[in-house]
Length: 285
Length: 171
Image (cartoon, rainbow over all chains, first blue to last red; front, side):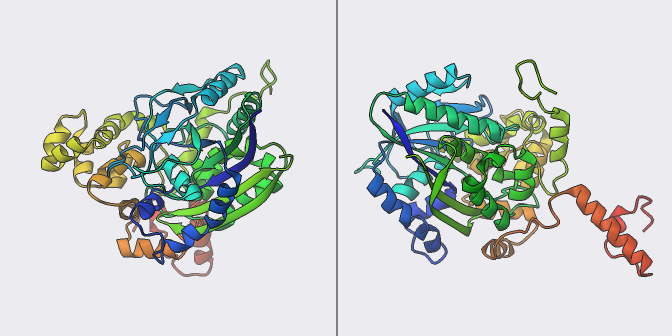
């Protein structure tokens, strides 16, 4: 039986990918950012997950304004890194897990989540930067990522994005789907994006460390209250792009009632953004 | 109030959207903006293809003329006036294709919208970013300014920076 053994949340800042790809991870500006992920790299080497269900948002890469799926699931054999305007990241093609992805897609639809099924999609920094942070950087031509990935793309760009509660319930439904897959697989679920940041307008550069810290705390101490947080609170407190944090609730919803916090990291800034990262384990696992 | 299947009713969409206009210095990418900016954003998407980037750089005006853009929108793009682009329906993730074509990073391009120099913006970020204090709500800002003005008047001194809230415009 497949099982979800851990949930990981992390920011997915494009400049972090550029720093990795440009060999700048030991620069004084970047070194503290990457040090925050050393613990998790060791954790992943020990855990050796078979599959990561990776919740992220596409940043006008695979989806333009012609089609805007609220929740999409990638069922393809593989996903190529997208060219976001400066050439694709020099990282390997991401290998999917079509059997499990289709199983989850079917289960979710019967569970009343009307998923968009994607069979051809490039993946942008939202998906590949977290992979680089957790697994290190394989060379594009020589190696592959050490895990299969099922992308779950969420619209958090065109309003309205899904509510936090809807995201939570999708997470619960994903967990049910994984549990009903026959193959014995070690599955992780990741929620990406955030934390506080605003990339637009005169208010750009907003960072709210106290609010971010409370959000990280509440993932373990009071997760149910996060389900009811309205979009306007994310926007006012965590900046216009802080809304990405609703995606963390898909991850959190999939982990069940109680979780143990295994690791946490928070750092300001990376580019325009507060870096937040947390590793959670379902208490029952 | 509950609907027949026991779920809470859909929230008031008008109230939901109205709140977004109360955030200072922020343009939330609502359906209204998405519709107005459809061609700005689709133009920007076209710059994901290397051959289009080359063609755009070779003649920006001619390239823009191929798109169903208003003259305002074209001018905002030519000027790289990103606040204006947002006003006219652009979205930052789409506009990222434009500033990437220019070789600008998010940090550089985003900073241009704040009225700060690139150095000052970067320094603010390194120092921990912009505090949310005082920039959560336009209404709250106005209320605080009114309180400050009233306090200053009581004290018998002219209130600094209250001119813009003077409804008579009697400067």
